[in-house]
Length: 134
Image 1 (cartoon, one colour):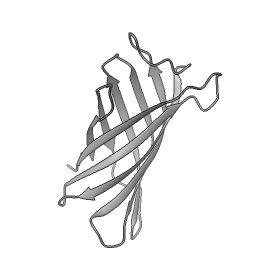
Image 2: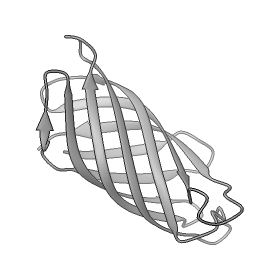
Image 3: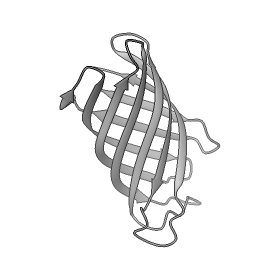
Image 4: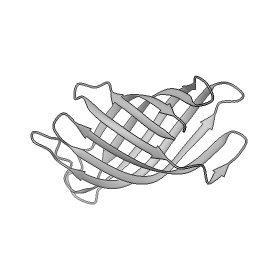
């Protein structure tokens, strides 16, 4: 499954994600491994890998998505100083299944160094995401 998103905040960015086939699927939940890469207009770059989950809301087309990805961050020109190369991204989103292979969602992610260094300013991205299964 590949995800493309264009964050809706003031700093434009492109995020690409790949989610492997689920390693566990229950009646309403699926868990998989995932990787993500993000670059914004200041040339800040985040590359991470971790776990992703999707929970169906009853028998409706609505779902909740979440992920946790440790990764590496590089500050670009005029970029956001996150105080350290090692950053952790958490994401929560609400989505809608359009058909068998396509979905859309609104997601909020947070990147921080998890207090490995001080200060720990953090960064958030609000994104409209398009999901497509291959």
